[in-house]
Image (tube, rainbow, N blue to C red; front, top):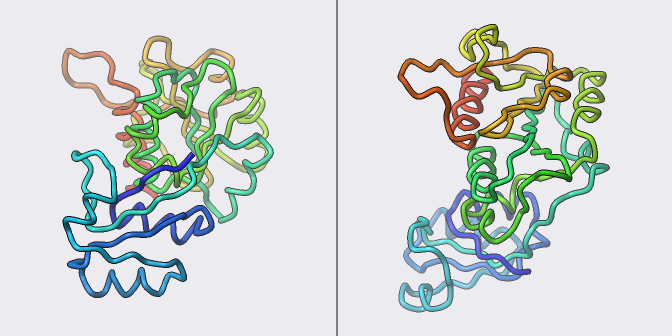
Length: 242
C-alpha cells in the first residue's frame, strides 16, 4: 500500500528514518532554496515541479499543509511484539501505551501528537484496539508512517517487563488520589498509559503502573476525549523532559 505524505517535517523525518520506503519525492519549484538543496542532497531522486503540476500529481487532503513537499511511500505496518526493543535505543525513551483505544480516528490523532511530542514507540494490545486503517492514517496526517506502533499479546505483562528494565510506568486516571500531572515526575525512561474514554485503564493494567496521573479539571466537564487527554499529558512530559 502506497501512502502520500506531505509537509516538510513529515517528509524530512521519513527521509531520515525510513528512506527505503520512499517511492517518489516531490517539491515545488518555489520551495525555499535551503530546503530544496537538502532534498536534492538526500540521495533520493527529487522531482521539482511547478505549482500546477505539483497539485495535479499529488493527491492529498486540502486541510493538510503541504509546505511544498510531498513523498509517495510504502505505508507502515503494525509491528510485532519482538520489535519493541529495536525502537528503545537511547537513554531515556518515552513510550506511549494505549489500553482500550478502539476508535481509529482517535488512534490517528494520538499518533500525530505522539510524533510531534517525541514519543519513541506506541504500544497497544492485539485485542480491543483500533486498527491502523485508512481512517487512522488520514487523521494521523503522515505520523502513522513515522511513529512505530507495536502490538503486544498482554499489555500488563509488557509493562511489567519494562518496569524490570528500569522504566517507570505512569497511568492516566481521574481518581482523587491520582497525582496531578504538574506534580508527577514524567522524566527518565517512562511509559505513559492511556485508557479508553468510557472505562479508562483496566484494573489489571493499573496494577502494573507505578503511579496514577491526573489532568487538572476545573470546569463542569469530568472527562476529555482520549486523544486530547493524551496530547495534554504528552506535552507536560515534553515540558519536563526538555
